[in-house]
Image (cartoon, rainbow, N blue to C red; front, side):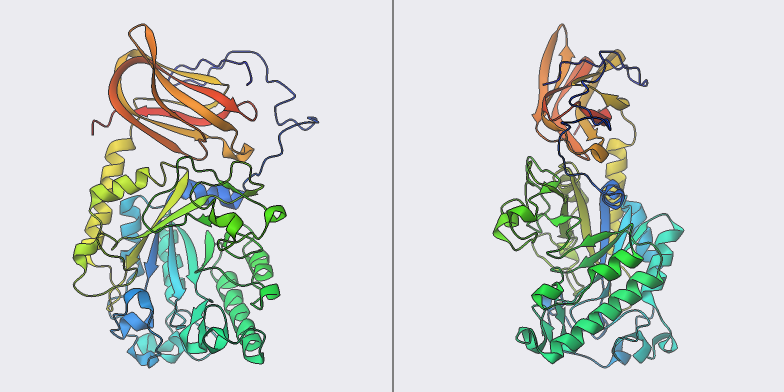
Length: 470
């Protein structure tokens, strides 16, 4: 452990102590610096978003089909797509209200109906009378996001496409791998990818539901298209690349600890379905050579039920705001992103119950964390202190590492000076992008973060404390 102490007064960035140990720092001349997985700028931007919304809509919903999670193996007349009140600005207002910084739209879901002006095949908005066949919901969605500073992302499914009879990634309902029909679909999927990636400007991510197969696996060649048109975006996912990972459940929790790193190809397939990755989805791999932080995804209508798509009479499934807050603690508060799936009604609007729950969730988060009791930013060292003008009540500490340098912290403890004694208040392992500690309310005159194990000099982005009084 590096023997170095850093004392920081709240509201300042004053550092004292010895110079960094050059053998453990990240200078250009270091011969033995740690070999760490590091995030790309796109991954850093995605992790900074912290909360996202996934908007789920498809022709099946417009046509009145209520199959759970849009799993019906039917196609419909495109003219049944008539969402008379569709307003993507209204959708994104809900994202803004809940504190989301990114949003993702199901450009094409399991049914295969394309909600943009596509030339890939004749089953999309070009084939409907809605808006005279000129509608482009992807374009509207992206424009609405950019109006209010929300980063737009696109979801589309190539593992299921009922119009193309694809189920389980392959045509002929999963039996057509290696056939001419599969090759035809692969070219179609690549054309869809080209259209989505080239027409709408920078996107925060492309999300393939259940991933996409690679050419070696008999699937389309998606990654070169992505890299050509979206070099600053996040790719999710294939065995070639997984810029973030699914956490392994849809219940709203990451592991304790939860690292942003995962095993690399030297230890087996880089895949959510591989035995190597499955065991680390929830917790991450502290020795992993690939940066792939966790995504915690939940349907908003997941309270004593589980539906990502609209069905009448299910307002009671909407998570109460106080439950969403707890899921924030077990996702964002555990070095992960939280993405919440919201439903769109057949008329193209968000249900009022969903809008209300998201707004109250955002209000609660702002009430808790808008104003820290004290905070220090951009600090280095194995001990960092917060001083107060006078003793203060605290019950939360939020820690952030400078993860552009990798995840360095391996063990840490938060202590409060209560009277004349330093008292442990919380402890953990990784910090990563963000780790939230909650503890019994205490009145302290100082707080300190003490890093007891690290790979190099700890670099802290933020050390903040709060009085929430739960």
